[in-house]
Amino acid sequence: MSATVVQGPPETRQSQVPDVLVIGGAIIAPLNLLILRSFSVYDLFVGAALLYLWRQHRLVWPPTGYLAASYAFILMALLSAFRATHAVEALTQVLQYAFIFFILLPVVISVVTTRKRAVVAISLLCAGTLGAIAHAWVVRPTQGAGRVVVFYSENPNRLGYPAAYLIPLLLVLWLLSRQVERRTRMVVTVAVVVGIYLSVWAVSASGSRSSLLGTAIALIVVIVLRPGLGLWRALRRLVALVVICGVVGGGLIAFGEVPTTLEERINRSLDSSDASAQAHLVGDREHLADAGVAAFLEAPWIGAGLDNFRYVAPRYDVEATPQLPHNLWLQLLVQVGLIGTIAFAAWMLLWGYDVLTATRRALHPDALLLWGLFSSMAGILTIFMFAPEMLDRHYWLIAALALAAVRGSRTAVASKGPQP
Image 1 (cartoon, rainbow, N blue to C red):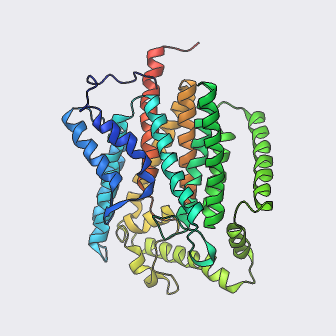
Image 2: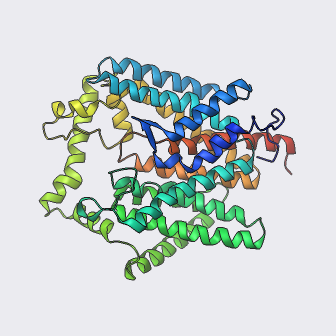
Image 3: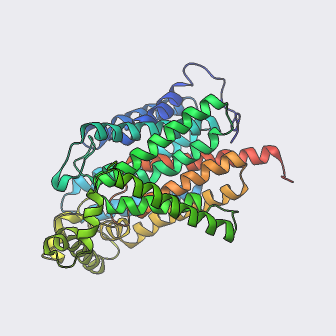
């Protein structure tokens, strides 16, 4: 991406409104500030930006493959809603996915046309997320077992989840800052160090085991698996990463800078003699998984409807709690059926292929941005192997920013011509 990736209409006060709404709105994207039911302030910003872009003829749609997968997923979700116990709740989530695929994604792709805009949007996304974590760090609101919660959710896990995308993006912002003046570089370095500390604290204070795994995978991807490193450099980076994480993590624990909540939950999960822990930390997930598999085998093509499996889970396993399966893919299988799940997986695979291919061909700064976004999504998808419903807008904002960067990097490479 460059300063002039896409030529649009002359910049006027009116034409800049959607840019301000979408890029500036990134700071509130992770905060889940709801207006009505699942409709948030960020959704309002994106919807308003859509109207401006439509009037200005600036709307850019994702490539055909993404649209085909999106239509297939929405169609199967609608068909599954006919089997839903509570059809209104199923249709509510169908509308949310339609908003994501057909409004949020094209609006972000249309607006984020330069590297600067992408960096600003990522910076604001990180700032908004860290602001919420900092609030939790100061106030320390707790739920059962001393787990700290974030202000916009009663689920402690959601305090820890953001670390999986924050740390890769913070590292990328720090690497990009090496190209600017020294004073700015020092400010960015301090901000990144504070951000990484808050991210580590959030994972520990939330007691979220999936957040720890997702963050670890994201770190390995962004540092070790970057294209072009080669086997030996990747191995050296892996060893260095393990040593640094061990030293920093051990030091923070030794000096009492992070809670022991996560450590205690992991130990209890591994303690087979603790019947209570096995029932609540492990057993409930197993019963939900068993119920989900049984429900899928009973109706593999048409699911139970989005957000509806929790109403029928005990029908398939009497010990299953009224929740969704704690796995994104099993949740999709039981709620939208096999075809809908394949469509969702195809969307993700196409996204991964496009981002990875663009990373290998892009100019260096664009490659850094793309790989940071790819690593963040790798961490997010790891978390959702143990959690349901990937509906939070900021996760899809990351996906959309990557698609915008893919589009921009291709234009930048084309304008530069063949590289020597």
